[in-house]
Figure 1 (cartoon, rainbow, N blue to C red):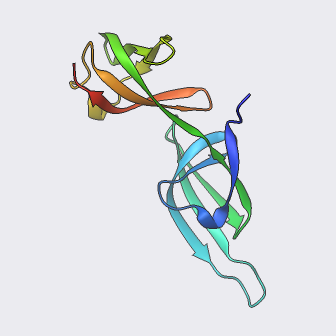
Figure 2 (figure 1 turned 90 degrees about the vertical axis):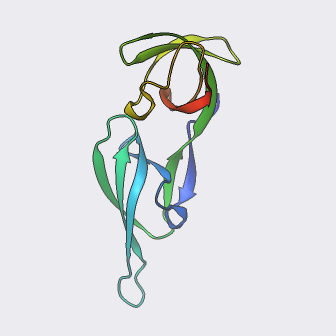
Figure 3 (figure 1 turned 135 degrees about the horizontal axis):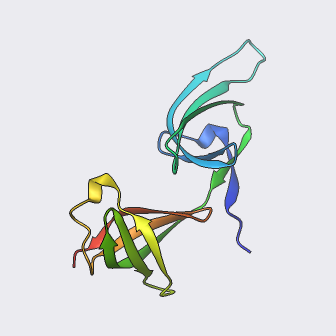
Length: 134
């Protein structure tokens, strides 16, 4: 099976990077790097926001330390129907159908027949944008 995360160096992280914190996929919103003494290593204070729960989590890692980065799969699906702020969609490659929450910034733009882009991260799916309007 494909791994859901891959290791990356904490030095490569930047704003907008994704990062696993406490087993939860998060997006980096801020990084502050502090240098410690002459022989000490730099430390990164990383502020993240959970991709699903939108909670802020702050972690401190040593410079160059390996961190887990979630693998984001970007896919497309067609909207079959909409109830409230939830769209029932069909994956354009596998034809699997499932429900996706319509994010506030896409409300009113997502209609039946619209092809949307969504991200799959560790089994969670999030609608991210519109590929082609209906």
